Image (cartoon, rainbow, N blue to C red; front, side, top):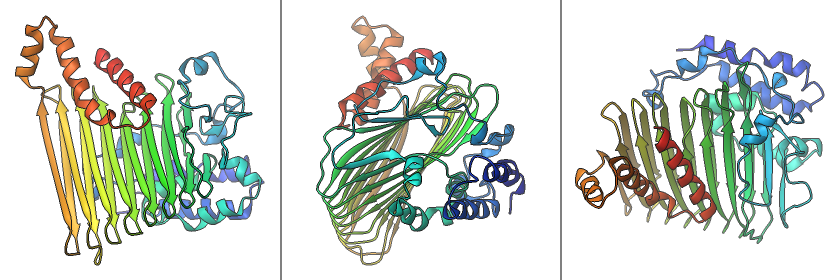
Length: 441
């Protein structure tokens, strides 16, 4: 059933934007926005009557009337509150966005990675980048069937454009930092990131979201990735936004022959957060590793939705998601592995494990296999449990307090994921955030 109320509340500022801050944009940019607006308005926000949103109710998102990006704080106004929360840079190459807008004053100015385009989308649009135009016009299949992705296109404004040239290997990561500061009025921010890795190239990208405490906003991010033959990308997404904000992130990956994609999704913040990850393996012998770690407490809600399409022979995918829940928090994991006809030699495994620190926390886990080919190896598993009392007792018998014993075991559960991070700086950061969250839990 069409849900007109969400469509009206969220789309209505677009006319003002097109007559204001976007009035001088090229016609093709507004045509993408118009298509996004049309696709979203046809359905509005998804409801719980839809199978993929059965356990995640977005009606709370409609509690606020959202201002458009035009009302957001200027990226040139850097208050003391903003300076205090700017996270540690994990690379000399970083771009910082304030309330959805690129902040050149806070970002890398003189240093640029060799063989890599690393700019804001707005900068690229001003340069009439035909490659970016072609990508935005053609490489968005999810936006045609996903109203959340379509909403991002409707508000297309800024984000990061990254292109790694052929055979370039960048040993240092590229760091994207999105900071939301609005406290008085709720806003909607729609970052759009485009990553193109040419043949035999290799890079790591960190995508980080953070917000001022008690700031109200709706982040609807979208990252599109194109990996060409033999290329490799390690992608880290760290979400530690305001606990009264909402975050929906879409990651869409297209992989060619012999390419490798690693995704580490880390979620701590937001009242309601959802990660949509679509991985399409469109060339033989490509590999995909999707992993995640999340901690939610109080009444937080986290939903991880993954879909891996095995379209060609001899591809391999692994999924591991670990969740930690306290108080009345709720987590959802819905992972689908799709093996197309002819995708022989597929090797795919999927696992979701949840650790409950409270009897009131709940988990809904739904791993799914859809197989249309012979000679494949596919498996999935899900487990929900509490801390092992014998392990807690053992640590207490060694003079460790009950709270510290539980913290040690909980951290150990998370380290099963973080120990595999190639970027040790990210692993250390995530473990510190978890320690802080456990103290406040």
